[in-house]
Image (cartoon, rainbow, N blue to C red):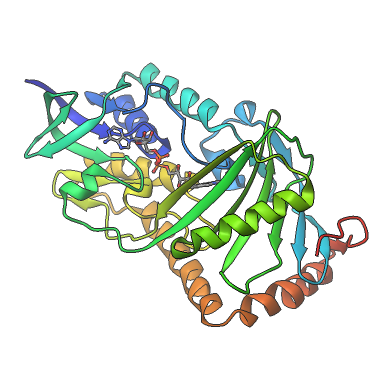
Length: 336
Ligand SMILES: Cc1cc2nc3c(=O)[nH]c(=O)nc-3n(C[C@H](O)[C@H](O)[C@H](O)COP(=O)(O)OP(=O)(O)OC[C@H]3O[C@@H](n4cnc5c(N)ncnc54)[C@H](O)[C@@H]3O)c2cc1C
């Protein structure tokens, strides 16, 4: 039986970052990815400034220094100042990360679906491959997590259309919390637009109707619909010689659904933990602090629809205006 020091299931940002760090340290590392092409993931591809610690600017598609924020009372042009937002094509990000990991010496097998994890081996396309360490970087429906008997009890859902209609502004909509706690986005890329919505998993049908309405209002073509649950049920990352990172670990933000940064950082942390049993996981501790704060806010918003309504219609614009960071542009974007 073929055997590796570490096998990583899933060539997403979590798995590929773990592979890079381990391979750079000379560890015999294999990544197995079920898809034929790396990076074909349901995602809007929005990155914030903290992602730039890991992602080079030259693979960024579009950069925004402002955001159009649409509330029920009006629309605002918000200056993002030193916190620009970047759009990246997930396939491009995946291909770049895979090349970096391979350059460092990691092996990557595509069209390799893991069908079972048993003792110290996995089964890929009917063949057993042994490991000393196993990393689950296999997303929200992780087979590695299942092998650990850790259920996923908390998820949020992201839905989007990948549209041929090109848009020029980065836009966020926090204008309606009546039937479901949700927010919508328009993320313009150079060759397509992601128009999507994040919210409660149980309200997906309502959200889809609302997203359809928004597309209709803005004359955005609904070219391809996509939806996926995001695991936010964090239960730890180290389980003996098995590790979880990224969405498999449930480390994404329950408030925004943002998970690329969390995936990359947790992948790096898991790799360091594999190499040093005494490693204290400072990055994970930092992520968890942030996640706890955000999910507390989510719980407060969920108590009563008027709480997010008042916050986004009154408090947020007031604070932004006070700091000279936004101006009302309701006449131009009269959407609500
Ligand atoms: C609609 C939507 C929009 C989003 N937009 C954003 C955004 O703008 N910004 C942001 O930061 N986050 C966003 N996210 C979240 C983000 O996509 C994820 O948090 C991130 O991709 C997690 O990375 P990961 O490496 O943990 O998992 P993934 O990127 O899901 O990668 C997991 C990999 O494992 C592979 N795999 C799964 N099972 C197996 C198996 N059995 N065998 C082999 N391989 C397997 C998959 O094919 C996949 O390649 C969005 C999510 C959704 C649903």
